[in-house]
Image 1 (tube, rainbow, N blue to C red):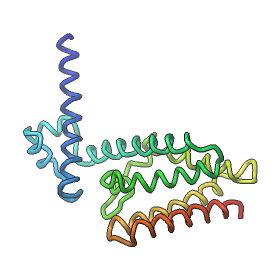
Image 2: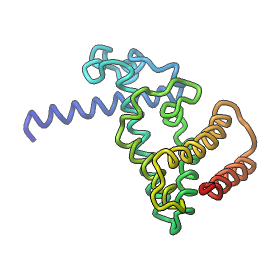
Image 3: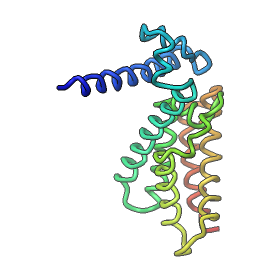
Amino acid sequence: MGSKERIQRLKEETRINIIEAALQIVKEDGWQALSMRKIADKIEYTAPIIYEYFANKEGILLELTRRGNVLLLNDFKEAIAKCITPEEQLAAIWMAYWDFAFTHKEFYQLMFGVDMICCEMVKSQPEAEAARKLTYDAIAAIMTDPNPSEEIICRKYFTFWSIIHGLISINLVRKGTNDEMNQHILKDAINGIIKAIND
């Protein structure tokens, strides 16, 4: 391996170490504790070196948001691959969304602004757009109108999102109800919205 390749590999390893250190800090102390100084201390570098890789904390948050969106998109793809009907696929997407929120709590908080301010540039990330498109396509597949408008699909999407995100937020910020009750509420909400999609 040439020196150029070795330098590039070391740079990429350092970048990964910065991101992993940031995530570890968040898991230990919460998003409010994250700072460039703490990241530098965690990986035993000086703060100026961190700035060589990320211009500011927002740059790190953006990369963490991208990673969260990659995980969520993969979860969606795995969920719908196990289903046959569009209704099953749509329900599986929202169940995967629910599971993601509790399996990857820190990512979810950052991506969707639960108990913190979410990363502002998330909407421009292709992974976030791809996950949204999978959901839009599943909604459109259920609709009786063969050419539903984007506005109608968007409205149905936000109906799902507002209810499920609301239930997740209640449980992340302060414990709402027990797991069994949550599952009943979640399934009732998903099934109810699916039944009402063509109303």
